[in-house]
Image (cartoon, rainbow, N blue to C red; front, top):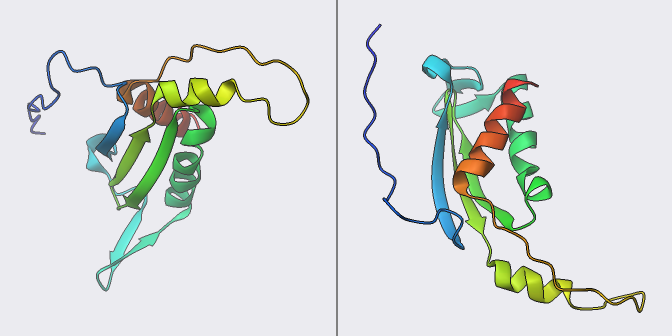
Length: 128
């Protein structure tokens, strides 16, 4: 087995919890085709691929400062765009009293890093 040394593509000193759009690729271990197959140039997702898709779509429920844009599951990897929205925007929303007349106090929510999000996704999918 040939072990490739990956080139570090992260920017030094960049805060990966900053609001923005992040393109990610997540590969299976040993690049095994676990999520489906290509048939007639189309991806046919299997049961594992369907589970991966459901877990991916739940990321915003786990991280309230995160939204998902487009994504594509392939036989041995997933491409997706994760959007971290501004924490300042969320803090402002928390101050709005929408329904009950209760005072809401400003909350400080720390935006997750891309590493936090991907780490949680990998952990959940590994243990499912």
